[in-house]
Image 1 (cartoon, rainbow, N blue to C red):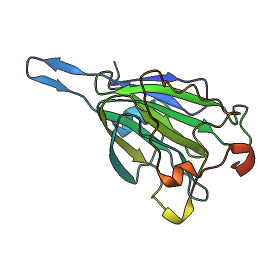
Image 2 (image 1 turned 30 degrees about the vertical axis):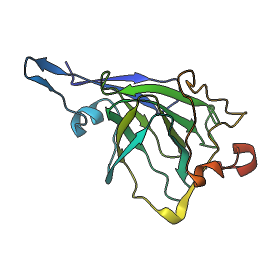
Image 3 (image 1 turned 90 degrees about the horizontal axis):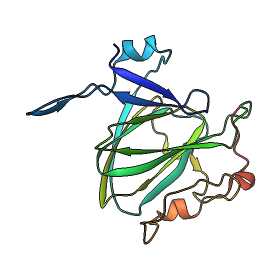
Image 4 (image 1 turned 60 degrees about the vertical axis):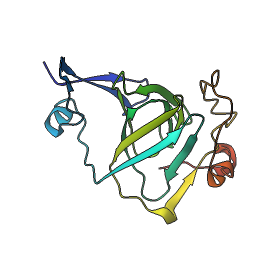
Length: 186
């Protein structure tokens, strides 16, 4: 049996990863990434950078991307709970403009892989969340772009029932809808 279960999302190249968790009275152990296991499952990824963020309930980060240096991201939560989303921006994809969202939490230990040429964002659902992600490309601040989180055409079904206020950065508040920005990778 492999150490990971790879679950399709309905969007080509985007998948959920469920690690095998070994638990006993001392706690738990799991591998979060293992190159050979991912390759055997058909996911030949090369990660060059790891990032970590901490946010409070209602913080929405995204939808972010890099235009000339698109990043693939393997994301997970080590504390709390988030709703994580990827939006396909590949111009030749039948799912262009479509999204997939996944609850990631310290309890379910699920991970989501968002391929390069996707926009990415997440909403913090718990009082606090710590979020980790491995990237396939380095961060290039001058190359940042994005799409407004509540784009009516993309129509992400954010779980807002228990969120009193969406907290955005000034930069994220200024993002445009996809139709207006016309972001499309070829």
